[in-house]
Image 1 (tube, rainbow, N blue to C red):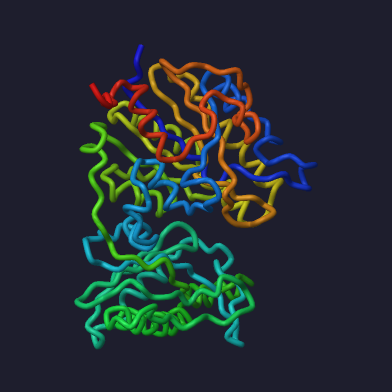
Image 2 (image 1 turned 180 degrees about the vertical axis):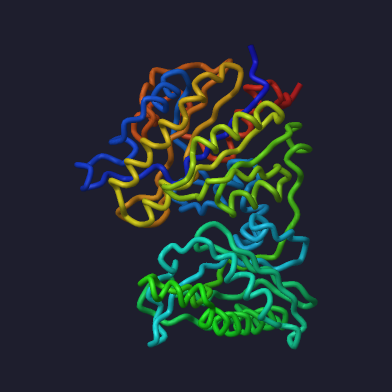
Length: 411
């Protein structure tokens, strides 16, 4: 039998380093994961550098690599991809940014870069769209909320560049920075002016918004500042279906991953109840994925909550959420005619609270796979598997070969 369907499951940031809170184990190795372990036992395992050894991948560059779009050729910045994921249709030449709703105190210092991981920011974004006016600069904009504290901004107009800095100091207790052009190009200087004016006007709107007044009354940090970064100019991506001959969907609560899927031509399937955090409805996400496999050849599913726990340095919470993920994946065991590929996009060690260059575990299970002796899905066990150590750009060629859609190299 040769599989005709592909489920590509990315467990965002699931891999880690040894944690003191877990007696030297990683959250993945410490977790009880009977489903992932069975998939490992029934498949071929390995470890993977999603971009290259020693390179700390972003979620954006890693997912592009995993889908077979080398980031060195296609990556222009996270902003355009994030914007596409928030329902802003990005066309060539538009400048995109990723944004955080953040909290700044009366002394002008940032007290929380994520505004208490606020959610439900739709009313704030609506007020910004209605109140900000950049027409005096000859610039238009679109602004949309993403998942949780995230949002995206896109600028339109003539003579805009994308070589600009960020106002995000990347730490609490610091003042927001002034966005500056990174070159002498008038186009970059125009974008920097537009960004600074957008931040100024939006801050005035947020400061008097009823939602923030309510948060203050409840003792919650107000979302009274926008941090914008990841500038990029929208480029062009060869359609996934033309590249591989596969129809596809993307299922992800993370706007970045949805955006990457959409720009390469995967259909985004929204799933109510999924949040991108540890409170996400994973059962609904798995059910939707199984439904998509009935009508599409390829489904990319991203599960993100473990990554957030890693960024927050919460090893025990990360371990516990991995166990929640594992339980939700049990229906996948019944897929006998589907190639299941499971990996992380990067490591997010609790000790680092950021991405690292540590390779991630990967397993491929399905018809035609040469099963190796590995029986545990974790960072060390998978390193002993038959795939050995590969790169992210190797995954799609391996998948295509296993479903008999690769092309012979040579006569």
